[in-house]
Length: 200
Image 1 (cartoon, helix red, strand yellow):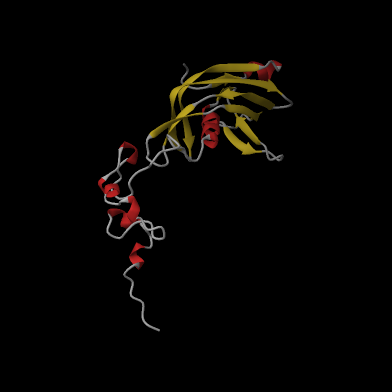
Image 2 (cartoon, rainbow, N blue to C red):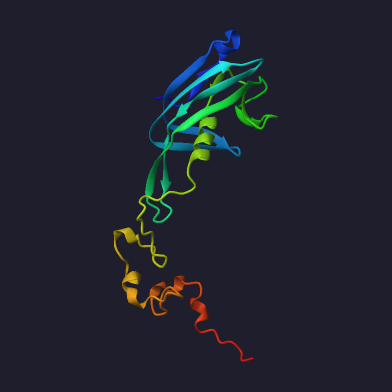
């Protein structure tokens, strides 16, 4: 298992031979906004990439990456393992002035990965592709009951005292929860019950 996804492009740049790299990653170290960050995977993430020469200083990278990331359930905050299958494909451009690899938009609107070191570290690229492909939210189970909004109890582990104080037959269809229950605090219109309006 390698620490960084490196692909050596020196031979390709000299003789136009294709370059290839593969391995497994436990994490990716990258920078965002000048801050060093680490993206950790729940199991070894296999990757495979190949690069072929185009014209001038341009090349094309293609391959696959299969990371499994951990996200919080949107309802109960339990950890959820999220496997991803990424198809990689991007233009590369060699620029000796580039101190570190970075993505820029070409005139065609396509993103180009610009690099200055023939030993190209794909950590930042793979991290960005992973984060862009991750879902906005996940649930650990379609039947997840979430958390009690009063005390934060995980309702998947059983009802809390607030739920026990709200018999199903007493729930008001219009206002949601009766005023006497602990869950009445959750109803945005509960405070309007006792509002005194001036007579016209």
